[in-house]
Structures are given as C-alpha cells and as structure tokens.
Length: 455
Ligand code: TRP
Image 1 (cartoon, rainbow, N blue to C red):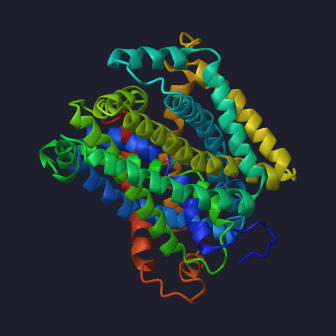
Image 2: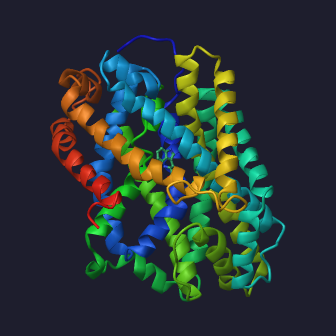
Image 3: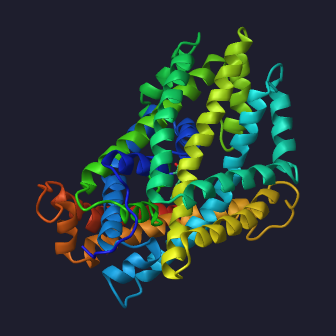
C-alpha cells in the first residue's frame, strides 16, 4: 500500500457507522418508501434486495478497494492506480457530482429543519389535508425561509467536516447513527400498533408479482445505487481513510445490511400509518412533507400528545439521516480541493460550503420564485437531480465496475480483498465475475432505459 500520513478513521465501528451514515439518508426514509409504494410493495422489496446483493455490494467493494489502495481522494485515486490514462475523469466527474448532489440534497435537508421546527412548535395540530398542501407550497416557494434553512444545514455540515475525519465525521456518526436507529424503532412500534395498520404491513410483506415488470427491476437498481451512495467516489473517499486491516468485503456487507434494514424499517413507519388512515402513499417530496404530517395528525388524532411526539421525532430522524449523508458528499469535494490544490482542509471546506450554498440557493429558488426559468425544460433543482442520479451515478457505477473487473491489475484486487493474503477472500471469484460481466450489462441497461431510449 502507498504510505502516506493522511487522516484515518480510528476504529472498525467508526468505519462502519460513518459509511452507513453516508448510505442512510433521505434515500432510505423518503425515496425508498415512495418507490416501494409506486412499484407494488413486497415484490419490489425482494427485487431491491437482489440488486443490493448482486450489484450494490460488488460495486461498493470496488469503491472501497480503489479508495484504500490509492490512499487518495476520488479525484486523484484513478491517476494513482492507472497513471497517465483517461480514467482520472471517472474520479473528477465524481467530485463534480458530489457538488451538484450536495447542492440540491441540502435544499430538501433544509426542509427537514423547517418541519422539525413546525412540529416542535405544534403547528401541525388541527390542520386539514388541504392546509398541509398549502403550507408546503407557501414554504417551499417562499424566497427566504428555505434559503436560510439550506444555509444552516450546510453550515452544520461544514462544522463537522472541519473537525476532521476522526473527530468530525467518525465521532458524529458514532453518536448520530445509534440515535437514528433508536428513533426509528420507537416510530415503528408506534406505527405498527395503530388500529388498521395490518393493511400496510401486508403491503410490505406479501409480494404481488403481478405488478412486476421491467420498470420495477430498473427502479430497484436505481434505488440501490442512490441508497448505497455508489457511483461517484463517496465511499472510495471514505475508504481512503480505512486502515490496512479493515476487511473490505465484510464492511461492505455490514453497510449494505444497515442501509437495507433502515429502509425497510422506514417502510414500516410510513405504510402502516398511511394505510391506517386510508391514504395511499404517493410520489415525490409531497410524501414526507405533505402526506405524512397529515397522516400523523389523523392516525394519532385522538391523542394530540402522541401526534406531537411522533411528528417531532420523525423530522429529527430525517434531519439526522440527511446530515450524515451530506457530510459524506461534502468530504468528497473537500478532500479533493485539500489534497489536489494544497489548500488547508478548512479553506477547502469553505470553498465547498460557499459553492454549495450559492448553487443551492438557485436550486431552491427554482422551485418557486424563479420557476419560469428552465434549462432543458427543467428548473435547476430538477436538472441537478436528473443529471446526477440518472446520468452521472449509473455512468460512474458502470465505469467503476469495468475499471475493477477489467482494467485494474488482478493482484491488486485480490490483495485488497484478502488484505495481502491474510483473509480468505472466498468471494473473490464471484466478485470478479460480477464486475466483469453482470454489472456492466445490467447497468448499461438501466442507463439506456433511464435516458428513455427503450420507451
Ligand atoms: N445514500 C444517501 C441517501 O440515501 C445519499 C447519498 C450520499 C448519495 N452520498 C451519495 C447518493 C453519493 C449518491 C451518491 O440519502
């Protein structure tokens, strides 16, 4: 391994919780339930699990080994592993993606703070379904409030990032991830014991394969990538801080399991509560910011104190999940600027935070005040979302699997999987087979489909 004196995570648990913190985010608690709702429930979940095991984990292991072997940020790792080739662009595009994702993700993350405040000041009480629609539209279209929350959220992320890898990222993840898990469990218990919750539980557990079509497979794959933070160097950046004894495959399994369990638990909060009051979970940001507060009011309407506690805990949970993800996105760009341009970490972080607040403001305004200005028919928020999740991430995942499966010296791959022969590495042949053949074909397929060529 290349010797450097760069930062490191301090413990095995810290490594797992920081990586799981990156993976667990709005993707689990907002996007996963809505995708499940749209794609028929349990059958989608089974296919999603298949995608995690067959594609997600092998690509996660690839990112881990690229990061740990190169001991470098995403932008530089490919130049170290394959000097003088164009592979460096995979890393650089990843850094750009981290900037774009952070900018629009922070807008939604900011909303979680507004909703935490609204829940905590009891402003949901007594509102009707229609009131929730109006208040969400008034808030998200307001020219100031969302910008303030976006800035607050990015400054909080900044504050953790400048504390460094071990004292900032690792320590905060070790506090926040267990808290998140406890909050989730409490909410699940509340939700599944509501009268009428059985329908929601059945929806999650009884697969209806009649709803399965090609699109369900593609939706599941896309969700697996986003949820595991794959395709743009997030996990390779974290892996550059792993120690040489870290078992990469085992760590990937732990992260995959935590991420999946949390997504499914989020489903067990949302569906039982929604079905209990006869509301179908619908799509988009409206699910957690319009439908859910209404669901909570109705579901616990008899006991206002419960509605209050449930709502406050839910939005705190969302904010915590979001910040451990924004930290990882921020780190990709900060590590790149810090190492590539020899800036101090603090200065690099200021550039990233400043740049993302700037871009984030335009993303946020594009949902209200500047709605009429579009590019390719989309506002900036939708454009950033589309370009990153539909183009940059699948392309990144495809290139990463080709890089590890075909380009990188097999001795390096095997050395990293087995920690230079000290671990058994039973998965090695399967890993290579998937990375060489299955992942490139499957991802090319999502990619082509998402760009609409198959429609
Ligand atoms: N995985 C996170 C979520 O589920 C979001 C995220 C963080 C992400 N880093 C990423 C998504 C990198 C794609 C790529 O919310």
